[in-house]
Image (cartoon, rainbow, N blue to C red; front, side, top):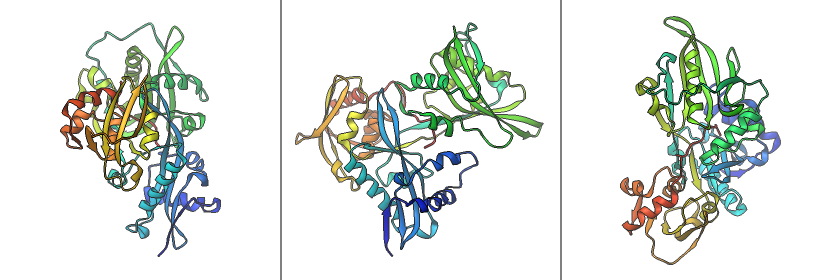
Length: 405
């Protein structure tokens, strides 16, 4: 048996996409064909067993918001191995080669993905760096504990089919200081949030504005839904952004007018979303929490300068056990000056020691160092250093990605 890892050839692309489709079995409209068809042979890195396609794999060259900075990342997608080729190490070989290439090229030192099974990717040094919630609520249960922010000066407008610019301006401002949000170009908008669903669904875009200044939007679909009380509607929120709390209240209050709706679902809500704290009865949201996206630090030296920092200072830590990216192992001196980060190897004794996935959690601020020590994912040699780590890695918002990669 011979395993070859290489990009797919143009004439092999249909077969590679079929492998991804057959192994993942995603719901209709989950990933539109236009998005998958946008993947070129140069973006792929696949495994072939004795000349036959076994593993599909591709990486988009995206930009991600990283606490105020646009950071280039490799967004891994369409990953799948046919069952007859599993347990042969195909996917591990693909990952190892991809990490080598990213290290050599030096352009995208962080890899991100959404995983059907996080256990697969945590073996390769990925970390779960985000949490997301889902809501399902009946319109009649949308009642706020306070009316303080119910601003009547604003108004809601319905956008036309091709109006992307207004949404994009709001989204860019909304995501500016956040971490994990992708920078959307026209293709990403059209194949993601604004992808029109098939069947009988209605696709709508509502913007809230005050004094003709757009301050928030919601994109959602309406589909027929059969209940024990007869035919009703199901509303699914695809995306929401707000630049003021008044806009947030107005958008949710808009859904109370949906008299024919049986339920409103939002499958990807940020972990620090306001709704659980402002609704009169939080249990009405039927909140479910799950993992969000995963991240892999492929090259520490290139990754540390990618994000924004709000406090200056220095850290001394050690990375151990990174067998897939051995260049990450060792003792490091990280310095933040003027909000910019730099890092280099050092001989100085480390304050903490950790594996590469624990560093990813700190870098994305999924956990602070104090929490990381408490749950046992870092070893601390200098207890008095923990507040400094907490302060240097902190972000204004919890990490989150609302796009499907």
